[in-house]
Amino acid sequence: MKLDKIHHVAIIASDYEKSKKFYTELLGFSVIRENYRKERGDYKLDLRLGECELELFGIPGSPKRLSYPEACGLRHLAFAVDNVEETARELNARGIETEPIRLDTFTGKRMTFFHDPDGLPLEIHE
Image 1 (cartoon, one colour):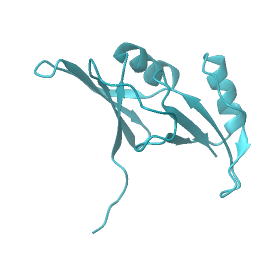
Image 2 (cartoon, one colour):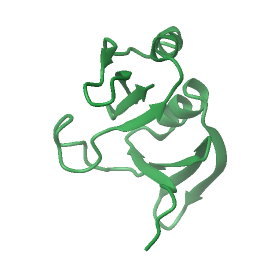
Image 3 (cartoon, rainbow, N blue to C red):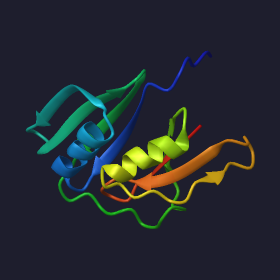
């Protein structure tokens, strides 16, 4: 078996419009396609950042995340950046709070976390 790369990551948002704005207007993802699925009563938004795709679902009545951040399942989504300090400043200027920058003890690279509108942990890592 040969897996080439991760094709996409999927996220279910509690407030579809708020999350759509966060990922597109604040983080800069571009919209590939947006579909309303009448039979399910939900939205599916396909987004792109570089070669990575993110599927954003707006599913009414989805349960909240049980615990943070140690629930089984996706722990966090990480973005590669050239400069963590500069990117953190840009996020802060857009009203997105970041945690203090720290050093990844395994890679020796700088990193920090921030959160999407549902509290999903997002990381920037050099």
